Length: 228
Image 1 (tube, rainbow, N blue to C red):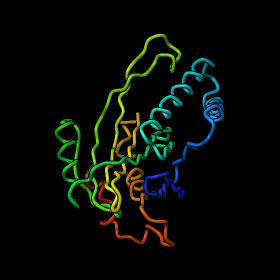
Image 2: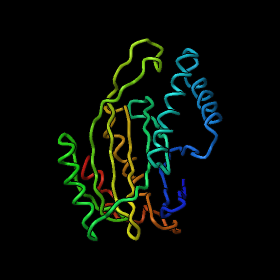
Image 3: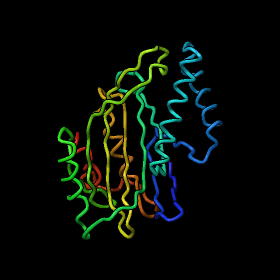
């Protein structure tokens, strides 16, 4: 799937995502998007209560609107089957953020050092990708979950794992932040190849007529090497 994500002032960005990722239409009317989400929930979880499904749809749309306010230019859901046969789900969000990049070539190492200090429990490093050097951070977070999502009065917390890629744009004062988040933490090793493929598919140039399969693995598997 190839998606172009231009902005009014931000530079264009292209994504070529692997199978399993489904882009959210950010320009779609929220009411229509919520209606389609409710239809999918009806098909996937026919035994769930109406209030529970409504709460889940509202929670999903609320989270999406928060990402849009933060400058998201692309959001994809990824639903795949794990090795044990069960479904696992994650979300990839891509942001273009105006930022002072500092001296040429200094951004990845500098930001990695800042993240390591700010997030002492995170795995932080610098990786080389086809589009350039990037800072990469993997960490676990606890997020509140309203009880209405599960049809119960009490709220709870959920543990999610994030892998955040931060790469400076080569000719404009913007940073690409690609953030993959999943609650299926136990399947992290299965997620890594898919997320690495998604990150390899980010480009500052229109796609060319060639396959990534022709690129030697030691040039495109740095994400998994660093965090696998």
